[in-house]
Structure formats: C-alpha cells, structure tokens
Length: 155
Image (cartoon, rainbow, N blue to C red; front, side, top):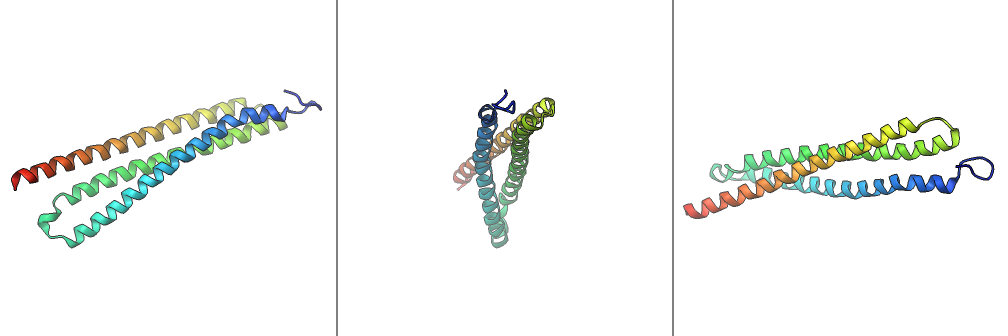
C-alpha cells in the first residue's frame, strides 16, 4: 500500500474509506425519516392534548389511551434516533482511524473493527426500535378502526 515515496497510497485509502462514507449517507436518509415521524407524532399529540382540554368528558374517553400510544411511539423513535446517531459517529470515527492508521502507522485495525461492529450493532438496534414504533402505529390505527366500527353499530 505504498505510494511513490513509501507513504500510503491515497487513492486506495480513499477507496477503502468510501464504503463507510456511503453508509453515513444512508444513515442520514434514515435519520431524516425518523425525525419526520417524530415531528408528526409530536404535532398529533399536541392536537390531541388541545382536544382533550376543550372537549366534554364523553368525547375524551379514547384520547388518554391514544396519547399514551403516541408517547410510547415517540420513546421508540427517540431511541432509534439516538442509536442511529451513535452508528453514524462510530462510522465517522472508522474513517478517521483509517487515515490515522495509514499516515501515523499505528496499529489501529482492532479499534477500527470494534468501531465498525459497534456501528452495525447500533444501526441494527435503531432499526429494531423503528420496527417496534411502526408496529405500535399500525396497531393503534387498527384499534381506532375497530372503535369507530363499534360506535357506528351502537348508533
């Protein structure tokens, strides 16, 4: 991996560093999706809180349960955001360590591998938290449909 003067081959080093950089880009897109979902959850919760404050007791009975579901969803989305940011930071450190390893000639292979594993585990955990949030959202919609059907049958 030597260049003209025995130094690192920069072109090869950049090629090796590109894969983690593409991963950071994919993480950024996923982070955008997560933050958009969180914003929608927060907006919906605020609207429900306003409705709860303005409605009479008969109209309120489903709202506390719906707010609790939104709270659970926001917790999972927050967890996913935190984990995916940890993943991106670990990948960024992998790229830095690749260059440090090439130029300073420290043996950082084990540290690079550990950071990459941490990034992958954190990304997997973030996706799992996101999956749970989506499942809660889907279950909440189905419960709302069933409740509406019961109200229609009762009228």
